[in-house]
Image 1 (tube, protein in one colour):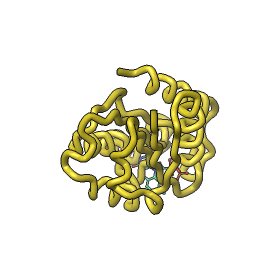
Image 2 (image 1 turned 90 degrees about the vertical axis):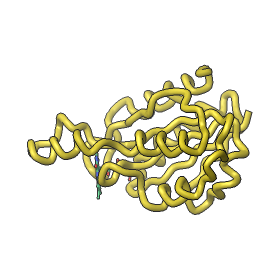
Image 3 (image 1 turned 90 degrees about the horizontal axis):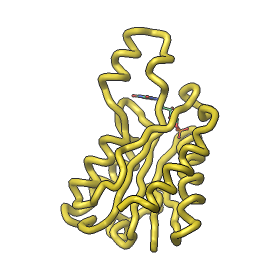
Amino acid sequence: MKAIVLYDSVFGNTRQIAQSIADALASRADVELLLPTEADPDGLAGSDLLVVGSPTRGFRPTEPLAAVLKHLGSRSLEGKRVAAFDTRLKADEIDSAGVRFIVRTGGYAAKRIADQLRRAGGTLILPPEGFFVEDTEGPLKEGELGRAAAWASMLLDAK
Ligand SMILES: Cc1cc2nc3c(=O)[nH]c(=O)nc-3n(C[C@H](O)[C@H](O)[C@H](O)COP(=O)(O)O)c2cc1C
């Protein structure tokens, strides 16, 4: 099985999560770990499993990642298994009630990524997942790398 993990990262936290997912997938798949600059939208369809992740920035994935997803053809992922993740702040730990409200209601990158993958015909095999950072630049919350590896193992078993 061939798997692609496509991700973007500004401060390095999503990169660590993506690496942990790729390492776990590598137990049963040939894995390619790609940045948006390395990804050819046509090439993404060449995998059996496509996992896409981004930091949540203003409720969305980063611009470079969104640009790659935008160029996916409408049926290009037909029959492919797909999954989406993001990194994000823990809303209930944000001090300002106003910001907390905005972050909660604005949503997260993983859902938007998942919607785009589905629009391209992909079959979402697990719900979009979020991994938590302590603060904007990180670090990741304790245990998140392990949770990412466990999530990746579930991807391998999901139908
Ligand atoms: C401009 C900007 C916008 C952000 N918007 C959100 C947001 O809407 N929701 C959220 O939970 N975190 C938000 N964050 C926090 C990011 O999710 C956090 O920086 C990211 O998880 C770090 O991942 P990285 O190290 O891979 O860049 C934002 C951070 C920045 C700098």
